[in-house]
Length: 68
Image (cartoon, rainbow, N blue to C red; front, top):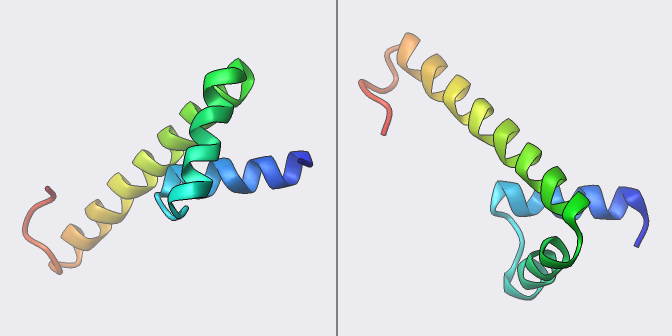
């Protein structure tokens, strides 16, 4: 697997867009590879921050009244 492919898989996993078998492969990768686990944690942080920013923007435009 190339570094680019690995990044794509970790990103897709963090976004929750991988189908079951590919998600299982990523879970196995992060169990075996501490670097992959750290990278995935960073991707999760980025996804969480973007989600918060998105919800805040929707609230500021009055499109939603609260963030869940």
